[in-house]
Amino acid sequence: MTRILFLGDIFARVGRHLTRDLLPGLKDELKFDLALANAENAANGRGLTTATAKELLGYGLAALSGGNHSFKQKDIAGTLGLDSRLIRPANYPNPCPGRGWTLLTVGQTKIGFGNLMGRLYMSPTLDCPFRAADRMLAEMSAAGAQITLIDIHAETTSEKIALAHHLDGRLGALVGTHTHVQTADAQLLPQGLAYLTDVGMTGPHDSIIGMATKEVLENFLTGRPFNFQPSESGGRLEGVLLEFDETFRAARPPQPIVRIWS
Image (cartoon, rainbow, N blue to C red; front, side, top):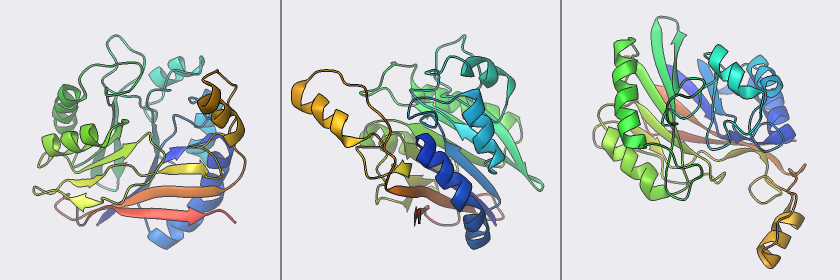
């Protein structure tokens, strides 16, 4: 049995410190073999810097995925090109710094971990994630990946679920990020793909999806722009535990994980 913990969008300082403080205990409790995370909001709620990437990897995360904020911080593009543990959506148009998937190893097992971004209500609008997924799986197979996992960073449930059905029978697990709200639809699809629409957020939940409420409310009420700042309270870690059997297929539906920071 191979167990993989995937943490939902790590948001700003609170999310990074939640990871630092809770990941060791989760390792003891859940006995996972590998920990991964979406970290595209890790630097002040917008993007990932080289320093915050190094920080999170130092806490025991094996690789970090991204999304629409993958290139928000100026210094990260060069790092994406150098560190295979950092991935960004594979459907960014070429040429693009970095890689859309990486190959990880647990014992003798090779794990392909990929990243895609949806197109509905997302900015920037990228290439087709369905076609990009087909290419990614072919590349993973050629590299010898036995377990395959993709983070689909997207807004709409329909696009995520459609991608799951497109990949069922070919992909081990598809988990969603971006909305910061954990969903209740963990399932195994008919041909064995483990699926959850959104794994949630690791960060300050006394907030509006991570940001302090005052400025976000002013924006909604007035239509004028305000300088959003990350919240500092209500820390909660959210993610999902994925289990794969000896044949490298999903052994059961994804198990949502929630832990309160005390």
